[in-house]
Length: 146
Image (cartoon, rainbow, N blue to C red; front, top):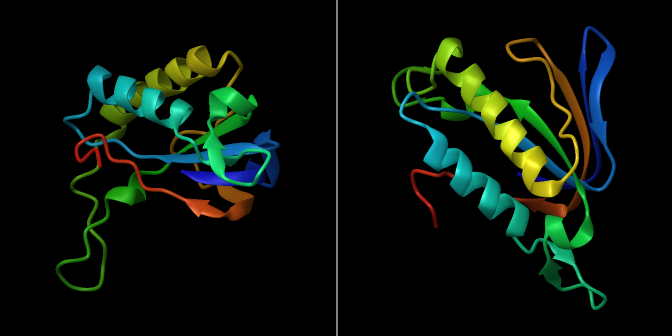
């Protein structure tokens, strides 16, 4: 999750999703993930106080600010580099599992924030551009909620 001033995702040099101020979410799924993981992530992301208040203190959430969300599927988040020099993605859920999870996550996030959530194209080679505001970058893992 990255707090951004703006972000966009392109496929074949065509912008397919873009936002102004808000959050860029790089979303990966494991085979064991399900509805409870989606619910936890959506609730946590929408309510995390990562936006500045009048004093510049991070006291405002996405819901407080009305910020936007851009969600991009990214299986490489689950890379393992324990052995050798080539990453393994064995922890990442296969597309038949992860695409419905990603779609459900996007739908739940849109319902939570009350506006559409643009995305990239699942499984495509995407180019993501962003202006990281802060920078503020957080890792959220529903399996290890910290």
